[in-house]
Image 1 (cartoon, rainbow, N blue to C red):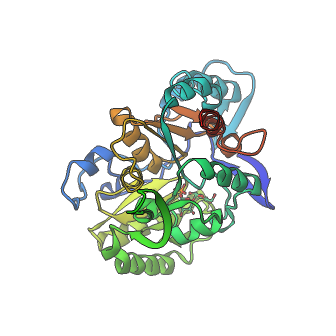
Image 2: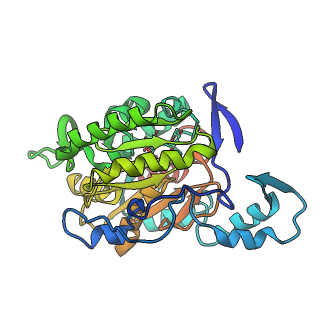
Image 3: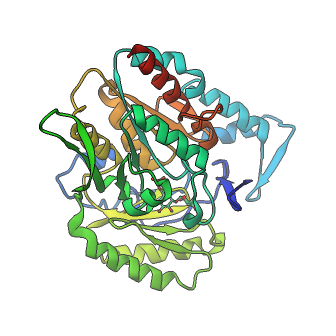
Length: 380
Ligand SMILES: O=P(O)(O)OC[C@H]1O[C@H](O[C@H]2O[C@H](CO)[C@@H](O)[C@H](O)[C@H]2O)[C@H](O)[C@@H](O)[C@@H]1O
């Protein structure tokens, strides 16, 4: 695990997903794939008989094969040895399919010619580094300034699993659009009928899961209660979803965390489980996700079905995949996956970590947007 510092906090690079132990779950708690989510009616029936495991990392078994290539520098992780060289090689190999956004500027710029850009940014792991205490996931001032700058020229939205209020507090910029609770709580732009421009107004909310509010609260309270004796477990109320963090829980107790979540969910068939980075996320079984939120925001901005719009989404987690997928379908735009390790993704490009999201020369971020903004300014 890589440790740096962020306002005195430990910055964590999640372990390379090679041989990480997996949390064992009852079948009913398996995450729904996007296709399952979209193939049903407005509410979903949780598939009770799907076999498998709930991973907290993507399966990368092909990396195991590379492990055996007589590496010189071995790393021991969870009792298994693997090579840093191999991981690097795997990453470079992976980048053939997911080229770095840093080195693809020209390609992106060419495709952006004559188009209006809309920028969507995930928060944790994208704008702020992953740290062990979710309450301390601060964004740097440089990143804040960069996002503020880019938002002057490009409609910019933050789409986060956190509650909208919390992520807005972390980001601290009033000129952005915010979608919290994985897109289930959107403070949308308002169209001015007079000149068809859009503006941000308090109170223009879209909350497709509002009927779940009290249920989510109930689940939050009960999970706080039952996990209170598990050292390191943290339950976070994200308004329309609940996060159960196990990052700081001893691995021996992960099973207990899983069982508690499983037992709780048995009483709530209208809630489902998804998973992120060392976190279990409980949310309504609604046909709504970050992809839907992007679609909704584009429509609200009047950019919905326009050929001259290029939406770009930057995110690091599995829940961001719904947005990547939405953009990839019909070649709507680009997803950029922030990850230090190879992952299957619907994104087009990659960045290694939040430090790459920030333009190295300071000023406007993310790096591709810097160039796009310059291009837009030169064109005007
Ligand atoms: O959609 P996001 O903005 O990426 O939010 C997803 C979850 O992010 C937070 O948890 C993650 O970041 C924490 C701070 O770095 C880290 O400690 C945790 O292990 C990560 O899973 C947030 O706390 C969750 O509520 C969000 O759902």
